[in-house]
Length: 102
Image (cartoon, rainbow, N blue to C red):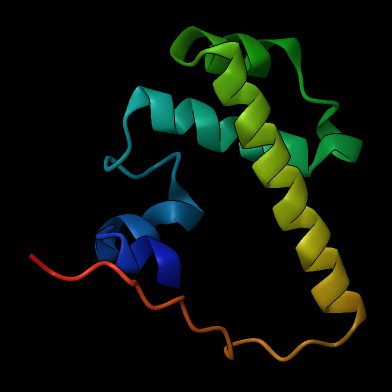
């Protein structure tokens, strides 16, 4: 979330992510992407239903779905590594931008 904040994402939208279905802050495309990410994360339970694929496909290009799926997979992998290796949460700091403010 630190990277999202650093990129200008609002606190309201970040804190609303846990309730994205009920929150009015997300576009239909974002909702489809969030549903896709959730379904891919819970693949052993959901098997990523066809209707979830159809919703995300209606709002994105196939390359975007591939990119999102790879990002979700990597996040899930890093979570599994961090949890199994007993990493301490809260120590992450976003990379400092090398671009000068103009």
